[in-house]
Image (tube, rainbow, N blue to C red):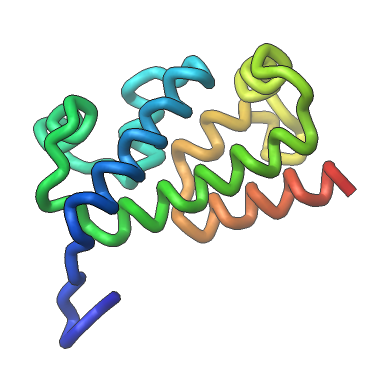
Length: 127
């Protein structure tokens, strides 16, 4: 939510839950810290590592919005890919639909809108 140009911060329980799920996914996907930090929208390193350790105060809504998209990407990928190993392999393989870059590189270097488009690509692959 926004109010007079300022981003309102979510409550710490929501942030704690969402960050825990995010870092669990990053671990399961074998994602390096540099890519995970990028998926969160490039928070400063101090914030990133505090969040990773469970200190969740001051997490901006924009970060939680990005986590929500990553979570939906995971749900869609479960419908497309049967095993974590296949997903991890696909994430690291250059893809012609993404300009011949690996999907993890594409996701790490795109905006929130780009993540939403990426989710749409996965949904179309499922159809």
